[in-house]
Image (tube, rainbow, N blue to C red; front, side, top):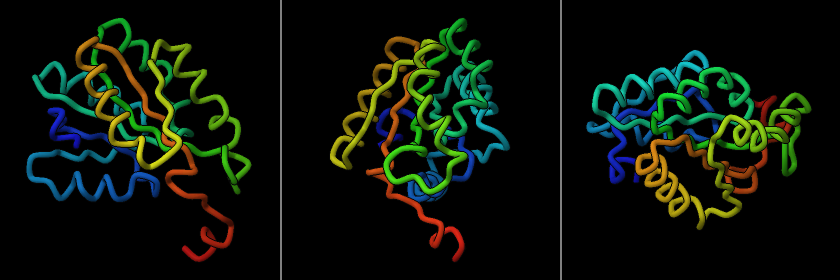
Length: 164
């Protein structure tokens, strides 16, 4: 689906919620998947890709949104299209209390920085919402985030984490 919207560069910090999408990006010869040290680097990657004539997307977990706040100012002021797919933590059945504050603040923080936010609560909504966000981002030169609920990606548990 990303290639169908012209995305050829994807930046990400490794995340279990995006695991399958990351694998698909790496497997596709038409896609360049770039592992980031911090989500904020993804903003620079997206700006550079856009200036170089390519479209990119940023994959991150809700806890990484806080790392991007200052860099989102660049996207807004320079009108760089930035579609983001954000897997949510800190909501439905969260086991890690450190994920709760940013998970609860993610939508509000993004909106405060001028990002258009779409929420996804079911698997059936993911593809159409992401496609719509891609169109909106590139048609309006804006940042658009699709927040994918923990109900869609699955709930992690202490037992699951301990066995890894």
